[in-house]
Length: 331
Image (cartoon, rainbow, N blue to C red; front, side):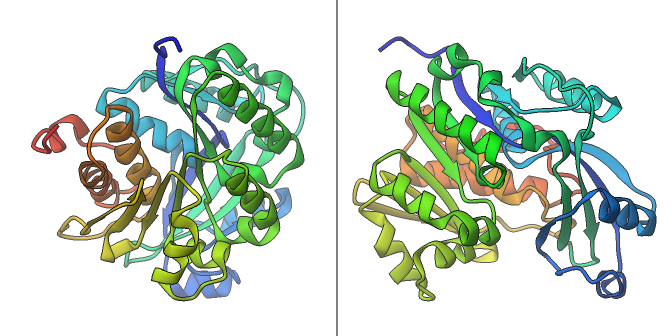
């Protein structure tokens, strides 16, 4: 098998985050589920945007955020995702390429517009997300760069994008390409609502060995396994996935790989500003360690450090020097 040109190639939603501070009362008034992620249509997106306070626009999307962290750590990355031929599409493409990530997916003309996520951040740092998927849900299998997928050590797939039919077909095709090239497939479950709709697919992929690295938080673990007890949920998947990584917010994270189990505590932080992207950046740190052959506990530590950086400021992309932050971690 040839040496890969990319460490990680990801397929995910190409979205621009629109973020604003919010009160708990506003969350209630707008009928949102606090701390959750809800898919919205064009009309609802316009209504929520009108109700927001002063906002910041930052390119986002779960898998794209993970790549931003990986690239900041020094990994070679590529992204596949669909934007429209519009201003936000140009913003997204500029931002991801400026981060040193290869992005060559052709733009899509006409409606719908480029996706955006309207994020309301309450004083405790909790984020309530309302996602208009827009053009991102129309990523066709024909848009895949199969040569790039075959030339990446890890194919990383975003669970959010499993919901729409067209990109789901694209990701199934991408798994086949990666498998055919002898590469690894990593999958992040993204949200409990995705599991409710497509849990049977995910179980089938686990049973057939299509997932080498599975990322989840403890709520997603419970939703996927049907086990309310954390240890029971871990036990039900540990022997079926080569690498299982589960984050637990302030309780840290646990990983099981090849019979080895490791735990990392959450990094201490003076104040949580915004939890947007915490899981995405945790995955970035973990994958960075994994593709470089680091021990399991070091992979978890890298993830925890990257997650702690992103929750200390607004936005889901790193602002501090991640290389400097992880420099003291052995390896």
